[in-house]
Image 1 (cartoon, rainbow, N blue to C red):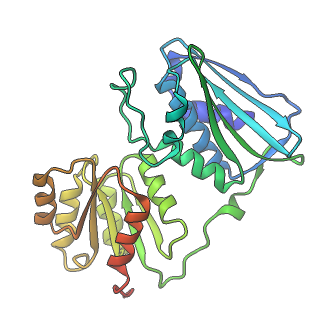
Image 2: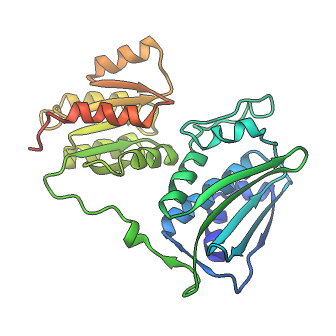
Length: 292
């Protein structure tokens, strides 16, 4: 666990340079049963959240304790930041769930980090919760099943999604926000589609040309090339013109929707969106679209 914590702290640098960190993980604490990639994402999201909502110079304390009844290891991340009212705590673990207060008005973000923490921890057999008190900041907890065999038992293979057969319909996800890509992956986790990922416009164009997915989810604002331009290029090339394209964006003005239609987009969904509604839209577009 200690090595996973250190790796996740490295992931959020240089943000860590503005805060103090205390890590207390007993050498003889039991190992946890976890997917290493999922655990790293959980820790990175929770550390980043504490850094974002804590004052510069504040202390962030990380600890792990063994709860023998039942056999779980409980990890906590405590900060000296903004308190979270009890009525707002549940909102934080929902898609795009953000609590707007005068203290948080200037903080940007899609509001996906804690929702993904909940989903990832749940996939590993654990739970997540938060406690907050006036003047004492907030403490986020998550627990994972304990096991006593190795420092960290990697169950990545057991939790990995099965390989899709070659005739499976494929969906390209293109978004520069890692948490949005992960949300979309999570939404489609139990769907019958093969998932392709791109982090910017040029990569989305390259993958779409090489793989010819049945559908592409394109973020409008991506580095290197806007989603509208990726859409226009794909729709104007014979090999890729048949790809169904849904534009995803926080910009929902009529002019943006018109720009999407002019580029050839088949659909337009504004963030924040309902994962279940998005899945229904994708299923509706692909149900009559056979794999070539």
